[in-house]
Length: 318
Image (cartoon, rainbow, N blue to C red; front, side, top):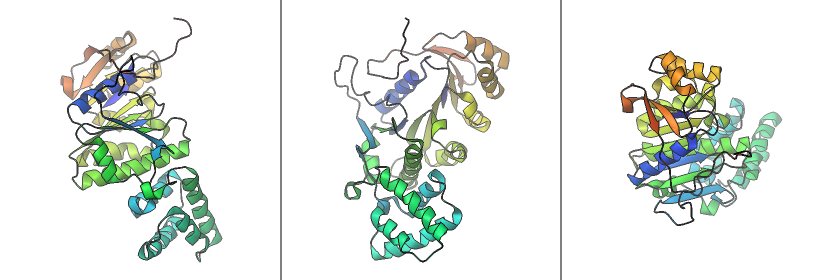
């Protein structure tokens, strides 16, 4: 699914409504929350506790990983894709990893120490040490004895649990590290058939998701059971091929010509009609296209939620 529209039109509100509804039917859900908008979904507007099973994790607040539990593939992916480690250094890292693994010493400080003493070119060593230091300083490996594993993630989301990964106030680098780790862990869970499916909600994914992952998530990962809802106010950041493969597109109000053209080019409906309808949509109303309406454009109102949705656009003049 893709939910798009300009700021303040109700995109995140719809995403939260879909999230809560799916969880109520037992769907395992994970949210990549850029702005801390999903952390209070278990509370009503007047502060009462809701029946929603919600877990919020953030760096230095329950979000700890151990290198040995993540495994070589995930850690190598983090170094290469989130931290841009050169291929030559990646090969050396693999050799060092396997050596330490055989000796049972795979904590992050031990890996850094091994790299510093490894017989390799200075540029390779410096590239590895600098990136491993970034991991150390990220706060994501501060307690490797109490780490988050794929088994724990599975228990948090199974039978309608919602896991919110709070990325608010985190640097671009930490966000990218976390996304690489979580996509790796979710892939392990689904590939092992521990869960039939996981539903991932990605707010403003263009801020932290590397380009090559868009197509990977929508094509390869959906075959193992990872189904993603992208929420963005910048429709041109979503690759055209992703729109064409989307099951459903929820379009809120747009006035920018470029945004309208982006959507009009890929929508499975008459371009002029879509542009005309989208311009006049009021807040909390959207145009729905896709499989759920058999590609016939349908205007829908988004119902209110009795939860602390957060994320409402603040107004000075009202």
